Length: 158
Image (cartoon, rainbow, N blue to C red; front, side):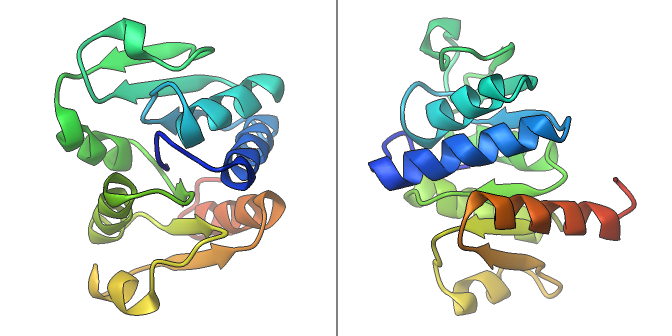
């Protein structure tokens, strides 16, 4: 998860995380928009030979990121963030804005572990999202994917 706009460093991290996710045989789910973290993670997953799924903000397939294998236009606007979270086993979040923060909060609220890739919105915020919030900070994509693997192991999904 992450913003439609991303600086070069954030886009690079998203690309690498997408590639590593794909190389493990996991499906990459994103908000599916062109640009930023969403486009970069899809490109990385494609480079890693993975399957990509985009849950779109709007109802127009033409707004989808290049390279998506599966596109689901929702017309739900920001409400599609709930779909993104509930369809995920673990949420990896890159630097973003309000939409990304809402996805992090929803993930913790619905019991999905969150890996924060090289950014920290604040432990106080994260811990208040749910009584049993499971989250971790990662400095790079390899560490993020290792944390995803551990969260999946904890729930018997590996």
